[in-house]
Length: 442
Ligand code: GAP
Image (cartoon, rainbow, N blue to C red; front, side):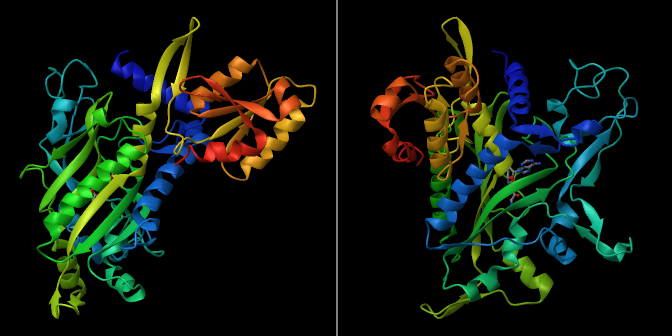
């Protein structure tokens, strides 16, 4: 299967089955902004829930917060985003397309896609100029320079400015972390690849505050733990790898950085960054706010500005990764079966309940089972069409378990569970059904 075909099939399945829709589609869409449909919102929520569980609920040394998207404009001066969160932009005067000057090699000339921008005789590229990626808006009724504020381009800053609040309000001591999930906005010049690079997206970020000198050890620990998390949500380890940032690639704040990359149909690309940010962030906020942000270590009787190890993943990117990783086509009895083979823990619907036929009391039993299960996890009831067709519809939605109420249910109370991946069937008593499914969702 050609790689572009796979992405096209996935985008089409996502629309057809209600994972992802183009934003404002009835108005022709809005560039690189996407909406999540009924299945997509569950999938992405499962990604975020599993991240929150692993980073906050299961740990004693990380606290969660939910900071506002709008922040004091000085935050973005201190963070370096006003001066430096820029990409070099070139325009083509002929076709009016815009490109990132540093990514021309990966782009296509819109007039002749076999050539790079600038290679076609008609291309007329401007000199690169720096373009700030932050979205600007105005606070209050007057649109003047003094009222400019930004939509946050990363969630991290909301954590740094709350570091002392969290420290004072909790019983934490360095080393400890603060985690947050939230929207971020970047006016990307060349967004694309479906929900891979968008202008509005969600980040799952954690900032771990450590004693200077222990940062390299924590950096290694966090690298290990974050890769393990991606394995635990079911991503194929062979399609994940590390990319270490070289000196020319490091962000202005980073002492060291590694990306976790996934092998997408459009190549290896970053899904999460792990950064050793040193004391850049607290140092800058201390300088710009005039507030002391040092930590007093009572045990050692010393003061220092903590170093920060950051883990930063995109919820939308991880969601796309799960979709790509799960998608497969198989030949079954002369027909193509499309399957989203999600790990049951992230699957949007955990189980479907299906009466084999619409008579003999089967719909009533199925309906009761469905409503019982639905109290515990997302389920789906389907009584329309042949049972094989119903299984296929659930395969395409990534539902791991189909529970069929059949003739034997009427006799002994058991139902058939058909498992999505091996397509094998087992019988389980209806009273044990919820436990049986739950045991497979971890
Ligand atoms: N606080 C550090 C930071 O924001 P980043 O490497 O710029 O680092 C971290 O972003 C993660 O956020 C990326 O690995 C990616 O998953 C996600 N991300 C960044 N830009 C994105 C975009 N335009 N669309 C979707 N996800 C994006």
